[in-house]
Amino acid sequence: MAGNINDQTVLEDERELSGWLVVLSGQWRGKDYRLFAGKTVIGSSHYTDIYLPDANIEPFHFSIRIENGEVWLTDLDSDSGLYLGEKRIRREKIVDETLFKASDIEFLVKTLEL
Image (cartoon, rainbow, N blue to C red; front, side, top):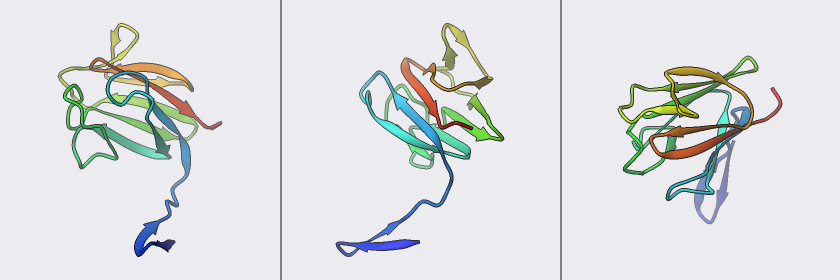
């Protein structure tokens, strides 16, 4: 559904809201982004679902998939890595309020009850 505000078309997102990605460090600290059911790609490319223009974030750095009551965090072959604590991960099932790092930027995933 679309609305019209000040001669600009505004599209309402009809996807299922499933949670938020919160940036805890770096220049985007305090910013949060909506996560929807399915796959969300995060990176410094304009072609990602969540655009983070930061020198430490790669164009297609990582993804978060929320599906069937599960949340999966996946490194998209980044050079600088994706970390849970000190452990570099490739793909990991996570839970609500999981803290992780992409390169040197810390994030938190907050999910709605799934």
